[in-house]
Length: 197
Image (cartoon, rainbow, N blue to C red; front, side, top):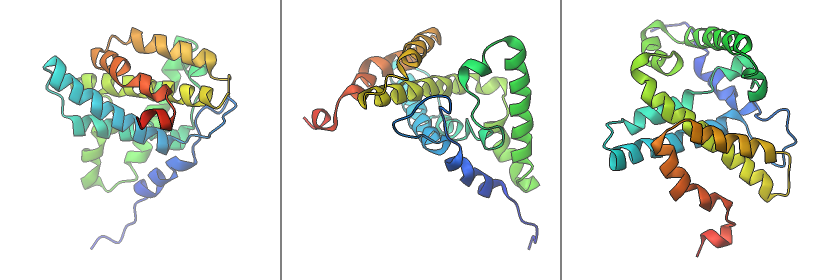
């Protein structure tokens, strides 16, 4: 029996302490654990839409796992606000290196015989490019949902972010995301009573 203890899962449990949207006034706080679940659900849906409507051959459960782990490095790095992260090429490149170092740090918290099973979700590989695009689209849709939810509380702080994120989703040229935005997203604007028709 292995006597060594590994901190990987205990660290992942700390996702609930990392708040998103730190520079914005929030009516309702959101942490990366909540966000990652929403991204996984939407990414899973995008993969199914791709398979059913666009004759793709995604593995929806695999795509969902990418969604679950997509922000795990923020346990170490914190949530870097998007305008700062993408301000220029130098900052973006440096942050990618920081994320990669954080990914290796987390992976090293696993026993060696398990690392290989998790590396795929933490390290970019060309073969997972399509799955990662779905997760990126789901991430943006989740951010847009947050903007809509904040607007429903009367908080105008997210107004510019909403416009920017809508444009970013269109720019992705992800047909699965376009379908989701047309068929599912508008209902996020409704109240509970309106949804229960």
